Length: 174
Image 1 (cartoon, rainbow, N blue to C red):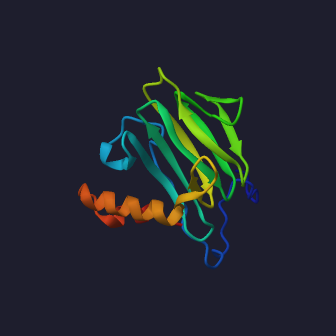
Image 2: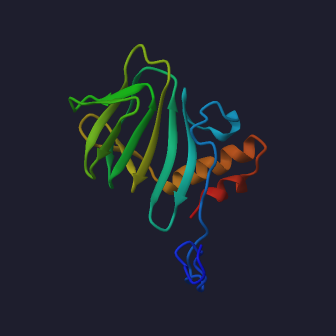
């Protein structure tokens, strides 16, 4: 850097007030990581949290499914972004497939039934979920809800049970 050239200098001003710390999670594409990091969600279904943003009502996690068939029927209250890391899946209500290496955007209000097809031994997808999933029956009657707070609660309970401590989940909270 030439004298007087500040183009490569780090910001030297004051930190803005109330800005949370950055969140960096290493090795997220290492799907064979420590099994204790995977939080059980249902039989043969786990999630690995990456971010619980409690102030904006969203979470980012990696969902791992080791079974075929119907996973859930749900409605979104906010947008969802999905990137398929392994395997494939689709919604019974749509013609498209989410294939390995692909991306899907799901708008708020969309109701769909997620299926992992026969022959897929493992489906792994990174999801960024804003708002909640409202689990519904075939007629749209609400059966349950899942949001950033319920995911955080499940992660804390799991990490306590496997010896990492409930506060291990707090590293993902923003």
